[in-house]
Structure formats: structure tokens, C-alpha cells
Amino acid sequence: MNPDRYIPDISAFDYFLALCYIVVFSFIAYAYYAKKSTSDPNFEYFMKAFYIKIAGGLGFMFLTVYYWGGGDTYSYFNTARDYLTFSLQDPEEGFRILRGSVENMNWYKYEFAFNRHNFLSTTASFTTVKITAIVNLFSLNSYVVSTVIFSGLSFLGVWNMYYLFCKIYPHLRKQLFYGFFFIPSVILWGSGILKDTITLASVGWLVYSFVNIILLKRKRFLSLIIIVIATVTVALIKPYILYVLYPCLFIWVQGNLKELITSNLIRQLIAPFIALSLIISSFFLAQQLSKSAGRYNLDRIETTMIGFQSWHTNVSESKHASGYTLGDMDFSTTGIMKKIPSAIAVTFYRPYLWEVSNASTLLGAIEGLVLLSFSLWLVFKFRLKLFRLIFRNSDISFLLLFALIFGVVVGLTSYNFGALSRYKMPSQMFYVIALILIADKTNLLPKKGKK
Image (cartoon, rainbow, N blue to C red; front, side, top):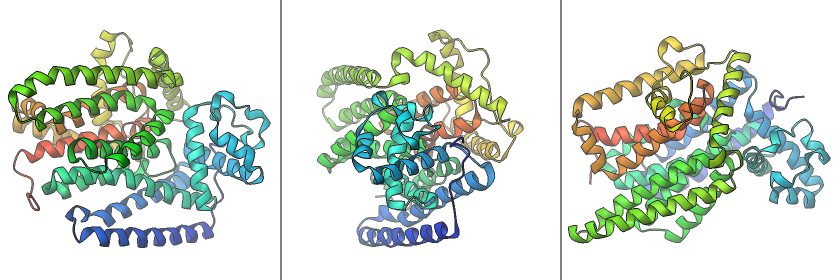
């Protein structure tokens, strides 16, 4: 039986158990909120954000079970559940598998891996199964409860990134709250049992930790530990995110270091050395990540991109899903450059309303229309001054640089609106936050709470 199609057992008890977990988590969250909110106004939307993420996870679960009737989430949960059962029967071997890598695994010797050999052959799937198995241990192997826990873990990562931006822009707490927690597709796809939920939370933790160390100079040791854990997690699941994120983070660091130096002469003298050191660091980091990235190795990236396109096109044709095309693709530098505008358009503004074929694409089309309208309004508002504004603000530059580069990557490779809605989440969230920071310069956003 295909594990993608096998619906996990869900009973009334699962929903009752999930309700109990939500109540317990709510008490813990509220106790933390009550303690922090008295002295920190940035916690104003903490409970609302928490419940939005829980609702997003449950919404994704309901759609998966009662509308789509299948998906990758079943594969992760079912495989993790069976692996956990095996581990409880044979703890020593189960722990050996937990510590192992796909390269030295003989899946044919394990009954829980029956019909899952291809699924478990990639590091990304294997890592996601391990994480899901740990979650299942606490959820008592309940699919509904595991979804709630995944939602909570995603909330922590996204909330901490939101919180740090509130520290920098306290007068934009409400607007940033909408940007981080009110993008419907990000709430849905970023809260369930999926690889994308794990990587989205990890990206949030990475940005949070970098801001702590570089800008706020707080919790440096803890932040360094978080950076290591989050980096390893993303590297094992979707290393191509780090290929884009780390260079952008280093450029952001350079911009902020220059701003922290008050002397123009010293700033001009050391700027080239800072830039050179960050470029070299980015290069060697990319090389090290590439060595252990499997099919995402930089030397194989063209083959991987072609494979993604082919796979998602086949899925679209075989399952009547919503595919798209950017025309004939030439993977030379010139060929990719020519497709950049189309890739950006498909990532942030498509599907267009006339391309809607189901409920999922309708949601994406509405989001795209809102983003396109917001973007055009800012372009007409600032005109050529927009570029000067972007380059003068290191935060906006960082957010847009990551959003656009990553948006191009996923736009070129997805070729399916369903897959694209998951893959583009980090770039979509960064793009919306950048637009909010730009809109703040129009003086039309409320300034309530500004310090």
C-alpha cells in the first residue's frame, strides 16, 4: 500500500486528546504571555499569533484528510509512527537508525520500511521522519495531536523572528503581526506535518539569532547554539535555502556593522575588508554545505532543477493538478537571466484569477492579487526614489534580496502551483515584511506605539 494514500486512524478520542493538548499549551502560553506582557509591549499579539498557528495546522489537517485525501504529510506520519513502534520494541536498533544516515541504511531488513524504500532514500525525507517520530512520541502517535505540536513548533520559530523585528520597529507591531501571521497559505502550509513547516521555523530561529548577536547584542551564546541547530536542520532537509539565506544574512551583517561605526573615515576604510571577508565566508560555507547536500550539491544543481520541473509537470498532468510553464528553459547563465522576471511574477503574483482551477489556486490567486496591488502602489508612490530607499535601509535590502533570489529559484523549479505555494513560503513572508517596512516610509501607516 502506498503510504501517501493511507489515511492515519483518526477517532473521536484523537480530537478529544488534541483538545486537551491545546488547553495545556494555552495555559503554558498564557502564563508566559502574562509574565512578559507586563514589561514588554511587543508581546501584545502573542496569544493571537499562537491560536492562529494552531488554527492553521488544524485547517491543513482537515483539508488533507477530508478534501485532498492524501499527501506527503501521511507519508511522514505513517512512516514515523511505524518506526516509533519498532523502536519501542527494539530500542537499541531504533536509536542506531535515529543516529544513522541514508547512505548506510539497508531498509529491506526493516518491516516498518516496507513499500517505503524510495521514500526513505533521501536525507530530507529521512530527517523529517526522525523529527516526526520524536513528535509522535509526545503525541501518543495521534495524527491530530502531532499536527498541533508541529503548529506550536512553527509558531515558536516565526514568533521569535516577528518579536525581533518588533524590537527594531516597535511602532509597526500591528502591521508586522499581519505580515508574519496573516498570509493564509503560509499559515496553512507552514503549520502541518511537512518539511516546509520545519524549515520555515528554522529560518525564523536563524534570523532571530543573527539579530540577537549582531544588532541587539543579547543572548549571544544561546543564539549561537540556535544557529548551529537551525543550520544543521535546514541543511539536512532543504540546503538550497541556506545557499540563499546565508549570503543575504552576511550582507545584512555588513550593512549593520557599517551603520554601527560612527566615523565615516573608519567606515570607508574597513568596509572593503568586511565585504571581502563575508564574501569569502559565504563561498566556503556554500562549498561545505554543498559537499553533504546530495542532489542539492552545487555541481548537480542544474540536473536537480530539471528533475524538479519534470516531476512537478508529470504530477500536474497525471493528477489534474495546477501546473504552469515558463516556456522553453535554457539553464545557461543567459537563459536563467531571461527567465528571472517570469520566475518572480509566478512566485509572488500568480496564479492569476483566470488560472484558478481549484480552491488552493483560488487562495493563491487572491494573495497574488493583493501583493501585486500593494507592490504597484508602492512603485507609483515612490517611483525612482524606491531604489534609493531600499539600498539605504539594510533591513529592507536583506529582506528583498532573499525574497527575490529565493523566489526566482522556486519559481524556476516548481512548475506546479501546489508545490510552489509550499516552497515559496519563506520568500513570500520576507517579501511582505519588506513591503511593510517600505510602506512605513510613506508616513501613511499608523504610528501608534512608536518609541
